[in-house]
Image 1 (cartoon, rainbow, N blue to C red):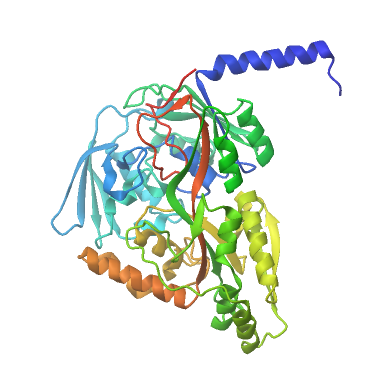
Image 2 (tube, rainbow, N blue to C red):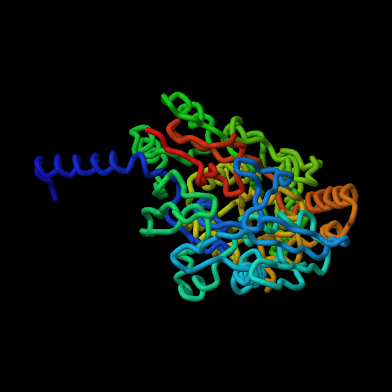
Amino acid sequence: MTLKPAILSSLVLGTLLSATALNAQTLRVAVPGSDMGTLDPYRASATLDINVVNWLFNGLVRIKPGQISPEMIEPDLAESWTTSSDGKTWTFKLRDGVQCQGGYGALTADDVVYSLKRAANKDTSSFYAEYAAFDTITASDPKTVTITLKETVPSMLGLLVPYHGGNIVCQKAVEALGAEFARKPIGTGPFEFVEYRPQQYVKLKANEAYFRGAPKIKEILFRYIQSDSSRDLAFQSGEIDLINGRFEDSWVKRMAQIPNTKVDILGPLEIHNIHLNMTQKPLDDLRVRQAIAHAIDRDAIVKFRGTSISKAAESVIPGGYLGFAPIPLLKYDPAAAKKLLAEAGYPNGITIKSIQTTLPAMLTTMQVVQSQLRAVGVNLEFTLVDHPTFHSQIRQDLSQLVYYGAARFPVADTFLTQFFDSTSIVGKPSAVTNFSHCDVADDEIKSARTAGDIEKQKALWVDAQKKIADKVCAIPLYEMGQPWAWTQKLVFDYPVKGSLNLSPPIDETTQLRN
């Protein structure tokens, strides 16, 4: 159909007027990816879902806005807390004046108990294994919540920040909405859900009853724009205020040249690992896993990704996490890779099947890896799926090799437990994200959780990292931050070093000035 010029002009004018009217009130965000997965905070693990979830919910505590260090934890829904001398009993006093969005009433201790029990339940949470040490969660009155632990937990407060299972939901809303809660979430945060259009956008509005005060930004339009070029053009034309960018040096440099634009790489750092299913042939042979590790050139991948946003990994967990230590990793050596394959009985090479996301940044990285492996006789076959399907299928143990990038609460225990503890092996009732079926460091991981001395904990975490690397449960590739650019009209009330939700921390103080 061809529009007549007069009609076309009218439509364009209407669009411009609408954009002008909304500009001072609406923050327009663009991200890569085709669609939302879920906004249920206990199921949201994809970066793009976590971005939105963080604006909707609170935790009992939080990391100070704009910061990422566990040392910067401060009150959120709880105004204060106490801890028993043995570290196993934690009592939280809730603040007054917190209202659930959507007219679901005041938040009480019962909502917190319900939330944490839901977070710890394998039927309702993808992060339940993190709460295995929780023994009881009780409310002694509407403002008091007590958590007792079976054993002490490193950085207990880190489990209660608004990230993954630490997000607090409103019981009445979850029960009333049922399965729809994943598409129409209700929280207590600075913004509340308005509308979701599949493969287009999620719309939020200011929570005018927010306990810290009504947000200065009145609406957030979170758009899915898969095409890198379309997303960039939308930002350059002023259609978008905040953009999640390409993981490329050239993108960072180009965006920095746009007038009135701020470009930043936000933490905490993600680590991108290749997880090898050690229970499936030929990956059950250590020599094959070592061969694959020798075939991968980390420096080349970092150069491809860009040195301004990435660096070569030095362990199986990200740098900067409490308990991280650089450890010896197998170096790029194609000749050694071919020799190991021959010794393992595969002189003519092997074929590995992998489910791979079509998300551009991840797919292009794996295409580089695919080329490197092909050079030593490893044929890596892709089954391409969209990103939500990718997350679903790798958790069903359908891929021999899983490429996964992740940031977690920055303590070694969190990462080691989710990716390398045998209780987290995918396919198990207690599954999290142990795609490699790794079990070689269980003793160290578990011992560190109950070690009373922080130096002893650190030593155990280092030993665990060494054992995991020695057995090549996973091949560390690179670490990176999240590249974002935003118009300088977007003004934060604090320095922005990063955010656990991997996007600029938009809250009630953030402004969008004309």
